[in-house]
Length: 247
Image (cartoon, rainbow, N blue to C red; front, side):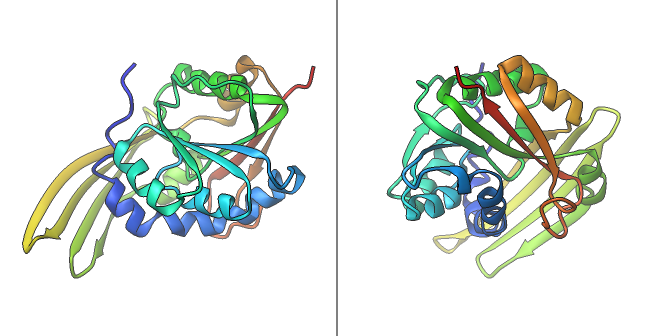
């Protein structure tokens, strides 16, 4: 199974624009769902950690954080942003770690980038194996309503030294979304262009619950980001909480 490397060209602009944006909004949700119940020095695994902004906040609170991502370029920024965290280059679908973590988090619809239910079940199985008994997994996903509301049309970011244009295409018959990205960066006095695509898969709540159960999780709960957790503007985003049984 190939490691996710498609996100290397996205790392710079993600770190520049999106990493802090969602992290600042999601930390109060994580506090409510899981962090309030953990010891101050708990060990946390951040799956698909991206450019490390969440790890930065968690290590500042004295949690012992390991970040995992399949993109070398994402991790290069993560190490700069969160120097007190540990990071490992690994694919969420295939990693193997001993059961030493009190909690696992995966945010900003990272797991939508896992493109089949079988592979999503692999991710959950790997996470289950890495958790201590009684440990908890928290993650969010874009659901169908979110794709239909937010993932359409195009938008652009224009700065003095870079321009990013994203064309958003949701194909409901396949439950797949594609972002076609064109990025221009001014480097050493010359404009450089890169073109790449990012793909997400839409899963139903029933599919997610079934995959979690297959992986061994219990006490599974789902929360609507806007209705249940007060995240305004997050139509069609759900958070899931699942626990590894003790004993």
